[in-house]
Structures are given as C-alpha cells and as structure tokens.
Image 1 (spheres, rainbow over the protein chains, first blue to last red):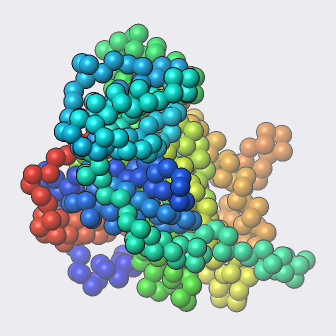
Image 2: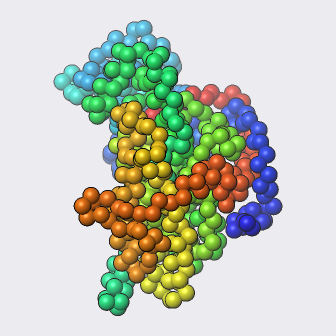
Image 3: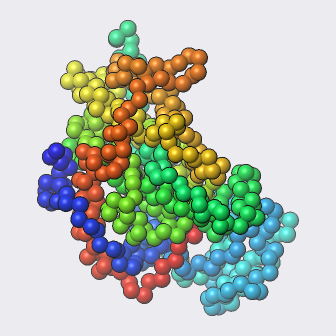
Length: 203
Length: 328
C-alpha cells in the first residue's frame, strides 16, 4: 500500500526494517525535575521531569510540557542529580523525626531550597529556602523548624539554590496568553445545538 | 490515546518464588490499604517488569498514535481544525514523554525503550497500524479511539504505581479536550453534506473491527492476570473495558443516524452486557506480530526521526553530564 504520510514520500523513507543501532550513553541527555506554580503566592509543586542537555533547554521544554493550559505563574527546573533525597516513610512516621547522622551528605555552605512530601502518592511542594552548611544540615534545620504537632512529612528534597532555575518576574509574560488558547480546552467544542437540530430534523 | 487493555505477553510468574515472603506481604498490604508504590519502595521483580512493559507499551502507543493523525495536520479542513489537531498531536507526544518518564523511574533508560520500539521488541497498540485514508478517519480516531483510551486510562489511574497514576491523571485531564474535539468533528461530518456523511459512515465501517480489537482478546482466551489485578497493575479486564466503551458510545454513534457494521450488536437486557460478533482475532495476532497495513511504515518514520536528529543530540550532549533515575 502506498503511504498516506507526506513525510514518507518527501523524505523517501525506506521501509526495509533494518536493525536500529544501540543508542550511545546520554543520547537522551539527563533528566531535570520540574516544579510549577499555578498562581502567585501558591507553592511550586513538583510535576514531573524533562530530558534536556542543560538547564536552559530544560526550562523551555518544561514550559512546553507542563504549562500548555489553564494558568501558570512560574516554573522551576533542577537537574535530578543535584537533589539530595531523604528516605521515604509511611503510615504516621515522619521522616523529620529520623536521625540523619548515618545518611550521605552533599553540598557546601549556602542557600538551599527545601521541598516536602505531605502525602504519599502525591507530589512534593516547595516549602522555602534555608541557609545551611550542607544538604543534611538543611534537613536538620527543617526538622527543627517544623512544628512537632503538624502532620507527618514523608520525604524531603534539598536542593542548592544556585542549581535551581526559577522563572524570573520578566518571564511571567510567557503565560499571559494561556487563557486565550481556548482551542486546547474541551469547553471550546460545543455542538449540542447542531446535534439537537439534526435529531429534530430526522424525526 | 492507548489500547492498553491487553498486556501482550503472558506474564512469567517464576521469579516470584525467589522473593522474600515477608516483603511480599508488606508490599501487598500497602496496596490493599490503597497506598501508592513509589520508585524507591521495595517491589517484586515481576511487578517491576510488568509495569515497565505496560507503561512502555503505553508510551509507544502515544508516540506512534500521533502519526496517523499527524499526517492530517497539513490537510485539515480549515484553520480552526488545523489549530486543534496540532494541539492534540502535541498532547499525544507530551503523553509519551510523561509515560516514558514513569517507566524510567522503574529503571529502564529512555534510550533502551526507543531502541526496543524501533527494533520491534516492544509492542504498541494495534489500532495505530491502520491508515487514515480520509479526514473522517482522523475524526474517528480523535473521538472514538481516544474514547476507548480514556476507558482504559481512567481505570489504570486508580492503580498502585504512583508515578504512572500521576502521569495518567494529567493525561486524562487533557483527553477531555480530545474527546470533545473529536465528537465535534464527527457531529459536523454526520450532519453535513451527503458526501461528508458518507465519508463518516465509511470511516466507521473501516475502523470498527480495529476498535473492537483495541481492548484486547476476550477474557476467556486472554492470559491469566489475577496476580496483576491483585497488585493493581491491571485494573479492569479487556471485556469490562470493551463493554463500558460500547455502553457509552454506541448510543452516541446511533443518534447521529450512523450505523455500526455488526448485525449482532445489541445490549442484552438481562445481563447488561453487549452482544457482538467477535472480531477476527487471527487478524489481531497478525497485526501485533508486525504484519499490519502500516507497521513497517510507522517504525520507519520513527527510525528516520531518530536518525535525522542524532547529530543534533550529539552536538548538544555534555560528556560530563551525570545521569540518575528520575525521582517521582
């Protein structure tokens, strides 16, 4: 059967089924974790990852992948390997009650962003910035500052602030036109009247 | 969109006997409590393998599924349809990225998944190995193939693996646009000129059997998946999904004065189940095994995209990059 795909003709694509060679390491680059702030003053929430060659490309791909609809006030991206990750707890056990002495440490004196997991199965939320001597130190300071009677925290991510790429105030205009892009929304495709008229006509 | 009703290979349960029964019990108790399993939680090897296979097949189906509709972007009837179709195809490719990421949290790198797709080692939904001859075929896909996918995906979104469920929640939210857009297109065709109506009817006639195949073989002949159901990897049987689809969409097709090419199709009032002519399952197997009308072309297009983009990816690669598995 002759192909109906214009690219097949234009690029003269052969359908010979030849073996595809093994991809080299890093062919798909590395992963970056993406956080989105839907509206001003709400916390940034982890949404997923993108593969990118560097932080700037990760920022652009994150915008395309995670902020095509509704509202957006900002995004933030960071390479996955820059994130210090605590153990994951369950039931009523809060990770902030655990002793981190034997855990690996990373980083140096500086500012750190702290993200907390409030419920298993949900996504991490950005809780704030802290000045600390290392990632583990930032974890300890978070545990000390967190109210003892609050709900358990199941997992903590600590990220050096200088490794995070937050959108700037000037970049917010990227999302100004989102509400105009109605063609991406189900509500823009109403055909009830057309259907009713048709059904009445064939009665 | 996705035809995820069937996991195409029989799961091999022999690795289970090597697992620690205490860990298995804790794992199953967590699922029974309704908690999600996260990437760093302990999980049986069989659970990990089945999930990788299922999520990977789903991701491949999204990226290959973008091809039959993508070919209609340049020929869409009017600017508004073109804009919508471009947005839909962009969504499908975005869904593939979300799903590849979810599979990657289980330990399979994206490089390996793409290799397995192009070398034919991994499967994807059969329905995308059929050609979209006319604009009406594109309308059928947008409405009814996506409708079938939503039935599967809403079920799987209640599954046990956290990253997959979160990806599906996001995907289902976007699918509501696809469904309404597709229905809008079909209503316009069915209520349009006699030629448009004829085109729509012919598309339904062409796609009905692939649509019935979409949910996978009937439960009575499909592989035993009790353990996958208990572990909330598979959330509904193939027949349950097919029945739900027929329940929701047969009346909507018929109200447009269109017909369905199956004289046996009816709902049994006593059982509440749909009765239909079994589609030819030999054809299904043939297409799964690579012998459908478009299998070779679909993979050739993907292979060409990979080959033509290679120099760009290599030029931008930083050799000192540190890869670690995504977190959640």
